Length: 449
View (cartoon, rainbow, N blue to C red):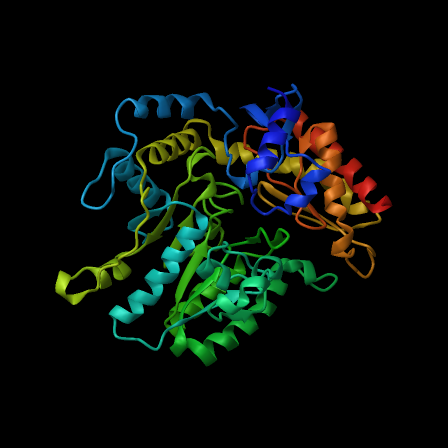
């Protein structure tokens, strides 16, 4: 098997996600034969440092021996059983451990298959809760500008990234869009906290005017990941939790991308000292091994559905692979690694090293900002540094960075003109320096084109 052979076979039969397939006439897909740690290896023996954790899912490296062993052991016992009327030990244990780790007050765990599905579950649960409580006028959701919550229709409806949403607009319910606290737009000298507080005034106004018709506010805590890795201060979440309580509206925290240590704490909400009404989790939940998501909520919500069958208050939402035994086992092994290796403390040092390795990007004449929250670091390329005028998206400057990275052995997948690092937590200081060096070369190439 060679790269060329498998790539040609792929192009004949596969349709890849988030891809204009015609691009692959000039840039063939890269077949991967194996992974180890932060490295991926193709069929021709070339290696690539996975700087984006394979779409943000891989926490502890590819082919992690501890997770491998746990899955091999589970394979001999049970691969899957329906979770309607049945249960199994990995699902129960994972639910118990997630609840123990989550912000206080979250006591029930509902499993689904992926991040978009988790968002769908939370939206439906919130709407259905109010309906079960007799408040049938609550039918709408509030979301932030530039937010992203997935690509199924409900999740897409509460997002605000036009690239994904505009084509399907006629199919979508209409969410209320609140101003984003994205601190990229703060005034010179204005702190992240001050700007985030100032931007909260728009959310306050929306809730005061629409609380009677709003089920929930949904946000990505601290980092709007697919929205170009834009970041904001935890004080916004503190203000939002208080306002949701005051106006009688649920708060949905979409921690699908930012949970499990990405922002420096196990869950981003911890940095604001809040508990959401619904906590959506996925991506890193299985260490990047298998599809799984979870929605955590509290007893108040759960009890609104707990009734005699004839009341028809049950939450009738299901996925065939809900609580899959192998996926839950991978999740348990992933949580074990957090405890065994003091990961959050070690990540603080890795975050510092990432920040140091990328600090000089701030002096680049075509970089508007270097921003970081925990193990997420973003570098924003612009046409004019003083005015922050962006490059025309049709110039595809990020694609130049991507292609250069592949040539040099680093998987960088920029979001438009934003180059970012979100590596597995097993990356070494030397690998961080290499990742940053290749990114710098790529940015230089991109602005010359």
